[in-house]
Length: 367
Picture 1 (spheres, rainbow, N blue to C red):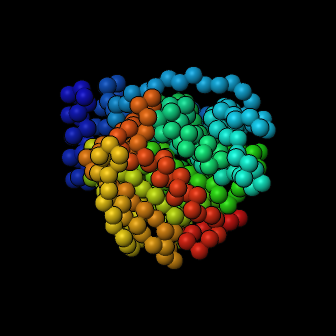
Picture 2: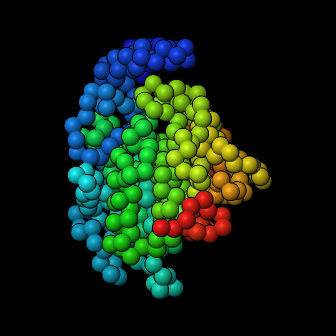
């Protein structure tokens, strides 16, 4: 990392710890203007011009993998597996996406297919995230569709979701409204099972997935967060930096009374988003059974189960020992992956498909 950038960010962290947020924000802005800093975290795909303050971003340097993208119509052809791209407009905003629609097995054809929404991290795109997580491969086996919204660079210079801004943490506003409108559009277009719609993400995408779960528990039956932060962890760049470095001061800002079932993965050696954030996502839940294990490659993990309560759907926390800021069990063909780790995509899919809107383990009710 460039010494100038590192020095400015250390200064910002010091100022934040001492409550001097205005000076900390100025230090962050100077670091970002140096042009050598880390890759960021969130944004708004509305096509509007952003102010200088809105363009400030946070994250780490990342390797971006360019994957050739198909050009078919976003409408799937019956009997043919589809990997298509499209554009969606909602209330003056537009967002690109990619959609995977498998051919369901014979025994699955009588029922609507589940839909999984996958939110990429900073500097990534939909094709890169699909390649790195291998979610299409896993979804194919169970007949689930996978939707990959793609953040626009015009909305955020580093293609991050704006999880840390208050206008993007509320129902019917900002990115949560746009992403959920896209989700519902695809669900209707592809005749998906409305009781089996799920959302997951990595880093900034994981933080936004938790926002969607809190703001729309009547849409998403379960949530997956990998290396992310809890809803309400920050309200601006300075508080986001503080939460990323040391963990969120508090969990949800309380947009909803209940939280959907949630599965969390976080490396305890993550120097980009502190592992305390993974625990903060499940704040208020009572831990139950704890199991230690390891992946086939020998990467250790601790899995904690959280039974459902009146406030929270049943949840899981996976502490990935010795692992950094990367998708566990992912493919080296994508960025931000740790192939030797436990397969997070497989475990998320297993967790998701065990939940439906309205079951007695769920925090929300169907619309």
